[in-house]
Amino acid sequence: MSAITTPDIEAKTPLNELADSHVHLDDRAFDDDRDEVVARAMAAQVRTLVIPGVDIHSWPRIKTLCTPGSGLFAAYGLHPLFLDRHREAHVAELPSWLEDHPAVAVGEIGLDFHDPALDPERQRFFFRRQLDVAREHRLPVIVHARNALEEVIQTLRRLPGLRGVVHSFSGSEQQARQLWDMGFCVGIGGPVTYERAQRLRRIVSGMPVEFLLLESDAPDQPDADHRGQRNEPARLAGILRCVAQLRGETEAAVAAATTANVRRLFGLAPPAG
Image 1 (cartoon, one colour):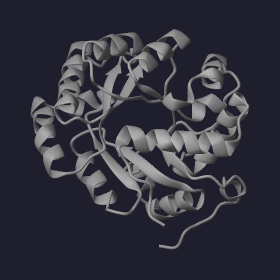
Image 2 (cartoon, rainbow, N blue to C red; image 1 turned 60 degrees about the vertical axis):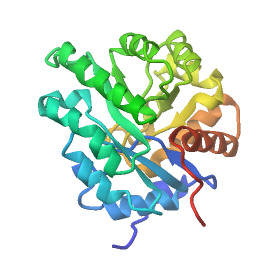
Image 3 (spheres, rainbow, N blue to C red; image 1 turned 90 degrees about the vertical axis):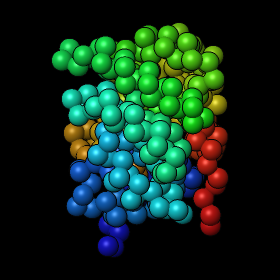
Image 4 (cartoon, rainbow, N blue to C red; image 1 turned 30 degrees about the vertical axis):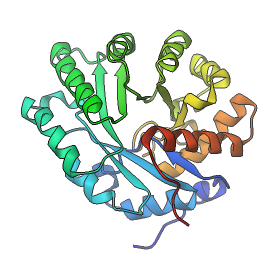
């Protein structure tokens, strides 16, 4: 399939190599043009994409996408928002799946207390078991923490040696510092481009760059220039621009630092070529 170039993406393409630390490229929203989405990402210099799983049915789709040399890297996990799909047998299967299918992380896992229909105790069971799996396999974790960040932090504290990223970070500066003190990164995406996100923008403007990851979370969480649209990894250019402006740094410096952070956290070698 030939790549499709849209004018707004082309105009905002950075000259800096970028890494998207969180993109659901296997999502059905991309079924009609996934090849073109990847081509646009590569044209925008987004050459590394980490694809986290959400349920056991997503794992084979992600495995198929993440071929050697593609720049796409798999993570496998059970997302709290899809609690009704999960079974204890699924989390029991995760260790053997990881042994047979290379992954850069366990994720997307975590807690979500926003929806009262999601049973907290059942969420905790899957979260804690997957944290144990990550420790056993010496893999980082990709953590979802909506309306649950304080409990997530306390849970991670009880498991020293874990490393990872809390994606789509939306907490306080104090909570961010607690994560950094444990060696955890924070994932920053489209929400930082909205002017009303003043607390998040303050945190990003002054945080230690070694804990900063950029992410699209596509097809969700588009930047302010594309609100209401399907998101895609090529949009990372706009997030880079916003973060660089907030920090008073060049796009090249932020791109280099955040890409290096992704490689370090997930144990990735630079792409060939």
